[in-house]
Image 1 (cartoon, rainbow, N blue to C red):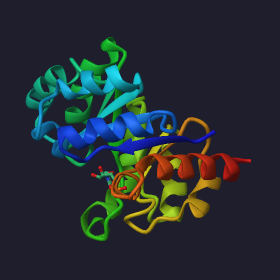
Image 2: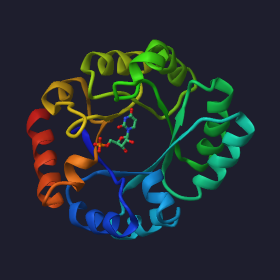
Image 3: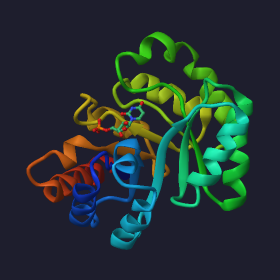
Image 4: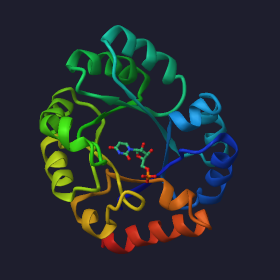
Length: 215
Ligand code: U5P
């Protein structure tokens, strides 16, 4: 079954509360700058103490190789993997991968982003980014639920597990993307769960919907 990854873009207090509420229904958690900058990387440990799920660091690392290496070393003391940008070049991505691999942690590459602004600069190079992810034998790509046909193509080109944001708040529709995905892939959902009146109920709803549509 396709996995459900909760994007926890909240402050510490709310993040820990939501993690506790939804833990029976999500397979993995994504933490990014909003949470880590409002607390610290130690938050990853606290999340794991609550729910023992895979935690991916969405830091969209995009610097020169030497700096990327330092960021990866410091970040990957926590969590199970890190998201990087590829437009900075193969050497920058390799620098992260070479830190992550020996630690048995994932390097996941952003291909095409899910927001409208992605059409101008990143969509034109997204196919090449997917091919680079395959060449570097990374652990996955990020590709948009907001554009199902692009998601399909990027998954095909990379032949890697996909983490796909955009369902819910960004207008992506589960029904349209689920058939493209398989049990190695993750659907990332944030606001549609944590901003709802009852995050637990909403996480359960998405989990059951994924199960029903996966058949
Ligand atoms: N995210 C995207 N689109 C991308 C890459 C990452 O939305 O192309 C991240 C956002 O930063 C957020 C999550 O953490 O995925 C989607 O959250 P939401 O729109 O479901 O609230």
